[in-house]
Image 1 (cartoon, rainbow, N blue to C red):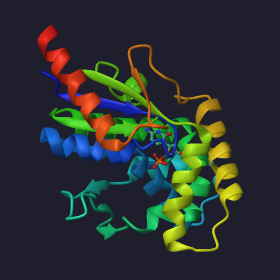
Image 2: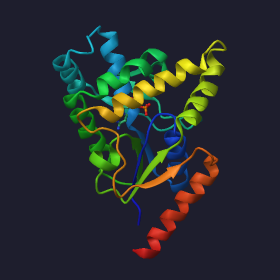
Image 3: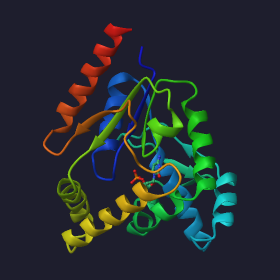
Length: 226
Ligand code: DC
């Protein structure tokens, strides 16, 4: 029986939408590990901590209590820090631009990984991120690496942001994705890589529903082989 599913991949590949739908279908919880790095970044910016001050960032991350509430009607789990709901705040462009710098700090990662493993310990969970199959849950029952071409990922982020800001610039969004990919893939600690056991799914030309069907089939096949 599949009890935990690890999903990794770059920004804009469709991981969180897929993870959320999959969790709902299976009756599992969904943990958005990227939201936790975003929460640390939000708190650091709020306290005006310099993002190259690693010691202060680590003690901030170690002392932070990050709480996810059960999903609201839109399927998104509100995220609380110190009792404050910061679900919307962590999606602001200022967080997008800075989160990779916080997520590359070793001690910050260690603090987050500890909390993620604790949340996953009771099973029946889908977690998405960059290091779930390689570090957080190396024994996961099913590991997926979800990706899409740079063009397609940039196009998706552009469409998403166009809703909020009609003046948004495609090339700027693409450049920001290139920069984030570079930091996430080249950092020293737990860089984004495909785990050797992970099944690669390229969503460039695949609608979400087809991706979900494919994963459900993988789960079924896995159960036959148990
Ligand atoms: O998935 P996201 O865009 O919300 O992730 C935000 C940032 O956090 C991203 O730049 C990479 C980092 N991250 C990470 O390093 N490890 C994870 N498990 C999840 C996210």
